[in-house]
Image 1 (tube, rainbow, N blue to C red):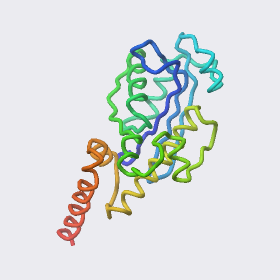
Image 2 (image 1 turned 60 degrees about the horizontal axis):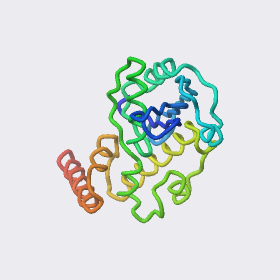
Image 3 (image 1 turned 90 degrees about the vertical axis):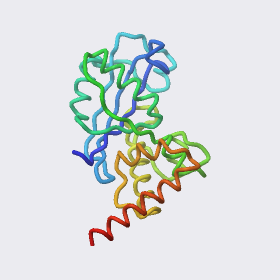
Image 4 (image 1 turned 180 degrees about the vertical axis):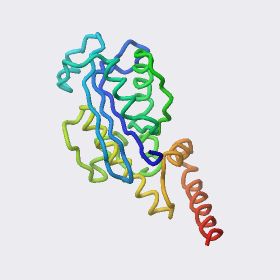
Length: 208
């Protein structure tokens, strides 16, 4: 499972758990070798009223108890590291909903927004929909539904990994490398990637 990455998306009643917002839907896909190998999706009932604008946007109105959903979600993810588009948003809801369910939340999150700014600086926008359009990726379901957004984010992540490996002659672009890359400034990311490629080539020579 070390090469498996869990890609997650939440639909919510608001922007922040700190302001009382709760999750209304969760979608997770497991990505291995650039391919989706498993899926998890559930609506979530947290006892918080779902605003009409959220119902209109997502179609979400009825759900299973949130704590039960989060137990299943955590079991599904296991020890896999996580990725989300705008991870600062989704990671907060992941941590908050697990905490409310009395469950641990220790997964590291990489962010495809931060990564896309370093890998595709020419993109007209780094929103999920615009990036998908820019790269020719297709939504397989309704936008603003958790599983459909998680699947597109997974396709974006797989494309990023492929492009990084091809552009910089890297053997692999796993979660640890992505976490390091997103911490680089855009100005320094190219130089850092060249260093990683040089290190990989040196390792090949030493092992030959």
